[in-house]
Each structure stands twice: as C-alpha cells, then as structure tokens.
Length: 330
Image 1 (cartoon, rainbow, N blue to C red):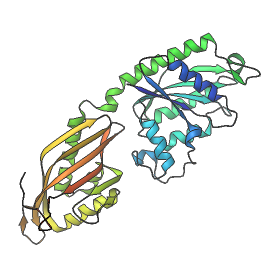
Image 2 (cartoon, rainbow, N blue to C red):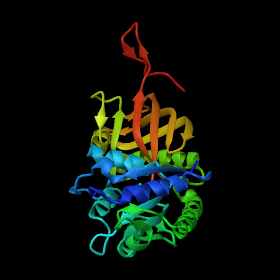
Image 3 (cartoon, one colour):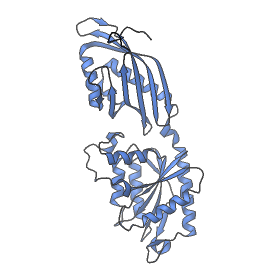
Image 4 (cartoon, one colour):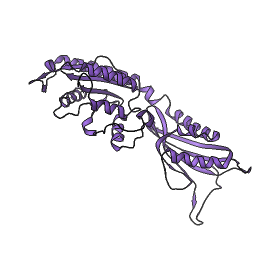
C-alpha cells in the first residue's frame, strides 16, 4: 500500500505542531487509499549538517547513524505532508536542516503542506516549495493554512480546527495521493528485473573496458564485497575498486562472462545470482581462460536507480583435500 509520511518540522519546546500533526494523522487515518505515518524531527535529533559530502553525492549512504535512520524513514514513504510553523517569515531551521541531510530519498515523490502561525505560515510554505523543487519533490497545490486567530483557542495555544480546515486537509490529501500515484512509475521503473540485468551488464562492460569510473556508478558508496581475493571482507566502494585495480594491472586485455543469471525483486530490494568467469591476455602475453565462480548480488533501489550494496564471489571447497574446485563448469 502507498505510504505517506507526515513530517513534523518544529522541534521547539511547547510547540503547537504536535497538535496539528496529530490532527493530520487522525484525519488521514480515516482514509483507505494509503497508510500514513508520523515522522517527528524531534525523534531523530539530526545534527547540524556538516558533512563534506553533499547528500546528492552520497546517494543514500551516510556515515552518521542518525542521518541513516532518518533516511530510512523517509525512503520508506511514497509521498509526504509537511507540517510546519513559520519562524521570522520563513520555515523552521530544523526542517531545512533535515531536508538538506538527504536527497535521493525525497526524489520523485509528492509533497503537501500544512502550516500554522500568526499569518497561517504561508511564507514558510513558499520557502518549502522552493526547497522541494530542488529536491525533486512535486509540491501539490492547495496547502492547508491555519492562522492562530482562526484555528486556535485559549490565546492561540490550543488547536481547534474548523470545518473549513478539515475540508481543506481532505482536498490536499486527495492531491497528494493523486500525484503520488502519478509519480510511481518514476520511482519503481517499468521493469525492475530488466533494469537489474542492464546494471550487471554495465558492470561486465566496465570490466572489459577496465573503466573504474564506470564500475563505481553501479555500487553504493558503502558496498560490502566478499571477493575471492583477501581479506575476508571489503567495505566501501574504494576497497571494491582497489581489487579491480589490482586485477587490471595483470591483464593487457580482460574479459568477463556471466551465465545463468537469475534475478528476484521484492520492493526496493533485489537478489541476483549466476556464474562468472574472468579471462583474457595477461601482461606477459600469456592467455588464461580463468575459472568459473559463483557470483551473488544484493541490490537496493535508491531514488529509482538500482545499485549493488553487496556482492560475493566464491568457489566450491573440497573438504577432503582442502582445495578449492577451480575446474568446474556451469
């Protein structure tokens, strides 16, 4: 089912946003066309953004655990409703900071807005629309505007939504769901299995060309690789490419063949396995047919693009002789 995240953007003590976000969640929960969940920035406690790597370049891989956890919560949603106050004619700093921590997790999703404040928070919404555009979010029309004097009682401290506010929220949610559905093909791709097979073919092409940059584009930055070369585990794209750099140094011409590739897709995760063989002409002029190995790939879809997050290469092991079986054929 479609999942819509309700992002509560204020983290101030005594904030009114908690009342507003809970109202949005309760009203939305009466619908049957989507699942709605609250993403409260106060629960995530994101640090001030200081990473030297822009979120656009991180492609969903983050060193800070808080950013990774927030990214996972956002990535699990197909669209959003942002609940925002207005601070000094603009959006809250905590919300802008949270938006900037991520990039691909926002892409190709719809965004609606619920704002509150002395003037209803309209200027915060206008700023949010600009940021949304830069993040690949489709901002829907008809935000829900909640002025203190109209929608809050007891001196502006208690939220008492009017019938007009309820009707406005229903219209906005209709728009968010419609745009979320319209954008779904951009997020999922027309044929995920075909995309994954094309990605693995691109890896093979990169090996043939000894093109490290081409190979880099097919992996997450935090890829974990269990290769036949030591050590037991290679962590990160640089460690992965270091292996290929060493291999390429031995070959004047290199080839790689994949056989019997099987692909299984489930949501934003996929699994593929087959047989691979590295061969070619060595730097000393000799040729080698190499050996067949078992190759496994685990993939994740990041903002509509499949990337390899883990791979493993292995050969069967003969327990009696203590040797790998390098002469088997698929």
